Structure formats: structure tokens, C-alpha cells
Length: 109
Image (tube, rainbow, N blue to C red):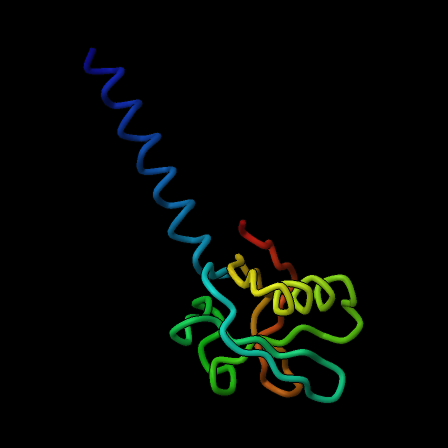
């Protein structure tokens, strides 16, 4: 019985560690603003929420590069349909421009 309890505790801690690290590269919530700049679409999440490794991105904008046409299309379709809740995954702040780069958008609902 004690061995089973120890295994359960180890598994629980392992899962908590996984989820704690996951927040470093993604954020879930409502997309509250979009704007276009040369070569990219910028999105802003509700309450200015950003992933941990995006600290320092200008005004909490998250950048979707123009070359990622599928991601841009998904976000614009969400915006047009007023279905703006999503999980947004990022790769961190780019060296040129200083924006945090979006690598995936997973619409919710």
C-alpha cells in the first residue's frame, strides 16, 4: 500500500512539472485585438496575457509571420466569426523586431 502511495505521489509531481513548464510557451484565452504590420499579423490576448518566454514583446503583441498563411487565415476567420477563444503557442522573442513569434493557434469551441 505504501509503495502504491509513493508511485501515485511521483506521478502527480511529474504531471504538475509538465503543466508548469507548458505555460512557458503557450497561453489560452480570448484574442481581443489584431493589427497588421509589414510582413505580419499581430494579436493580443485578453488582459495582456502572454507566455512566460514572451516577456518584453512590445505592448504584449504576439506576431504571426505573413509566411504562415494557414495560421493567419485561422485567426482572421476566428476574428470575423467572433469565435475568438484559442490556445496560442509561441517560440519566443525573435532577434529582429523583438516580437514574440506565434507557431500555432488552436481555436477552442
